[in-house]
Length: 294
Image (cartoon, rainbow, N blue to C red; front, top):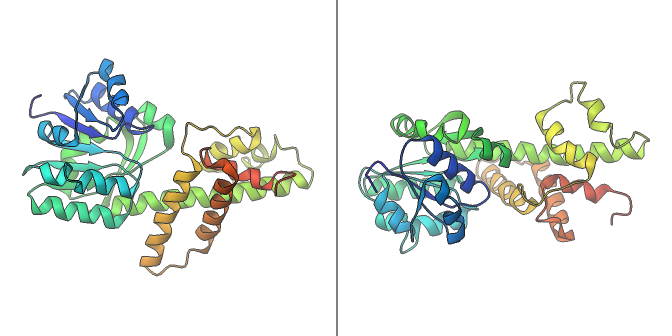
């Protein structure tokens, strides 16, 4: 593996697609690791080389991307005994594309800087279809120097790259994006319930609303699932929505904002999870309002 290789850690629903795009578009060799070796093997046909450990990725790549489920996994990958911090070299840069917390991003950044390496938080938005197509929205918290170094590779995975400020600010904006989406999903469920109970056909509620000032991307994307009653289990699950909303509310508390609407959304998601809908896409919250629901 040459010293211009890129590394990728975490090949789940989003990360696997992102790593594939990186390998196909960057012009660089890509080496990857996941706790499930089958995920790495599946990318072999796209030119991705398999690593047997996090340490091996770090040893072979000067820029290492990671996309894991949340803060606990970020801490393990970064601070574990065989993790990134224990093996990082001076001059490397780590790009965390996980939706986690501002605090863990800044802790990882400080540990890397102490060893002469750099860090960027670059969480992603727009969901699975955008990960597949390489059209993600990426919010970046990093120095100008770090951003310019990684921008060409972020462009392999996303079509909208926003520099939000220093380390942690990319995460701040991603959490606010998700918080607004989750609040909107809950508002859509309420609107659908009220409209259908008042006599409007379920198939037409959001079609009609889309013609007025209530129209939004969220309504058309998430509302379509409430219209059909189909809630896939291969997109962003309600358990992940609940996790991210918890991160957003923790940040709100830290900065002294009483985010009551977000708290309501969190309670609704918890109820949906408690009813067994946790693996389904978050518009499933509408099932709480359907006739016969208790």
